[in-house]
Length: 375
Image (cartoon, helix red, strand yellow):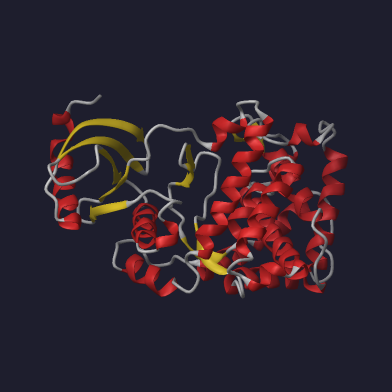
């Protein structure tokens, strides 16, 4: 427990923010630092009040990269107004933009998915992934058609310019020269039509036709909280309206799980999504969207990781290497049937790079060698 005096001014400002939001005066005390890093400081505080019926809350202070912290704020504030999302995320309890702090409900003790995945209980892992996938889909379903409401909140807070899926797609496409550099480094030729295929993928992501909904944006193994109440999503620093399959395909490409577990998540996700998204009921259209978003994610990884890892591997996430991350991303993309002619060149490009990498790297004996240890 920290000395309350160390955070006296911060707690005082947070008390005012809570009272302004709820109408209930409170005293916050006994702050405990849960996380303190470059972007933010997160505290759990005891709540003393005759009117507020909560024993504690979470205070998040935005430090650097305010566009990320205020997107987290805007996401929770937006979802607070969506009844279908209340069981999926922490409650939003107010904030002070000048002080760069906001308050949320305390989810209490629990674990994240990373802890469950490394716990070694296969039955528990499958159940957790199914539940998480269904809740991810419920988040999308509860926000269909509400983009204007989110935009109004985000635009009222600092750091909102230059965000959104259209800008993300634009930046992704601008970075295609980094993808081409992989072909050059491996001595390969890009297939005919590859540039057009990349443009198609970027447009599909930007338009999100038939699949537009609110998205967490960064579904990492640590960005969730499992308790007896079920899983909740946390840390919405990349929250925004984008393609509904962006988050779920992360578990296939960015944070790859074994294929069998990805299939479990995909089925649960699609079953739930189909309640609100007609295109999700069509196997062909859903598979097309899945392949396209897997391609978007896979090629993004090749813009983040430089081709010099061809010569020497480097860590990417914990003990997971950059070579492994690239190889898995391309393998998962190639594993999706090229749904439609527009994706054929992208699919061929992935196969070309995989063959070239296979000649360079001979240390991957099985899928297990390629995946991060937490999977």
